[in-house]
Length: 320
Image 1 (cartoon, rainbow, N blue to C red):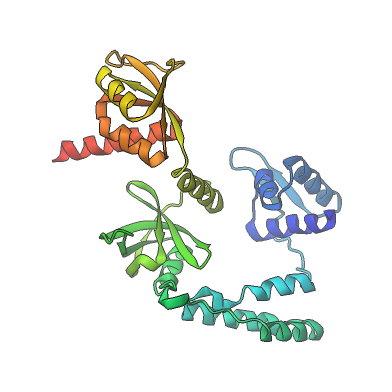
Image 2 (cartoon, rainbow, N blue to C red):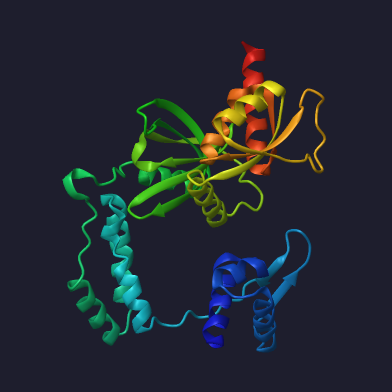
């Protein structure tokens, strides 16, 4: 309903400050045109919404203006209680969340309070997996503290293959996926994702960091998940190859002749091929394995990754 959406727009503005029409449209799953009409409707209703132009522009409420948040309805109460604090899987966080939920319940009207108590009596969350497969979230509170205060974070990290190393990162946000928690962070090599259960000895540093301009955690995670899922899907790559590399590609992969199109090629490349790889990981392996014998022309994300890796290798060779 439009009235519910208008209230959602108002509460988002109140909670987040300045928000673009695109962000509101994505959050509420409607068009930007619809959001623009909603904002005009709020303005016509004497809600002081202000439009700001420019690259950092958007909409915000006039300074100092707030609305009273309406009480929960039954559906909202049920949804809130289904996300019980015990689902956090960490005793300290669960205790803090339990305290907050109890304060919220104490402020409810009598009829909703009775419903809330009845609902909680009929729901139990066991955060531990079978045979001890639950996530170790002992580092979660420390990571959360670093994220909230925008302080650098140092920790020991163990990869899935058992390799361990000491990391220092700029922690940008936490993501809960199922019962697993992930830290999205920036290190000297770029954006990284770390599973919290693989961290040890996490420590918040005194030094702060500057958050990337217009970084959006939800958008970054959505793209990261899509990239990860695409790694297992077939990928067609446009490649410029030397005679030797072209011959080997034809022996090992499904290929067909193609044209360079808008790409400018170096003289050592004699053939342009469309090559079918079983996954993006396989394409990366072949591209790096052929070294200067090939150049990835398309898709752009794979080309950029190969170029970045090549620069890193060249930098290591220079400093060796």
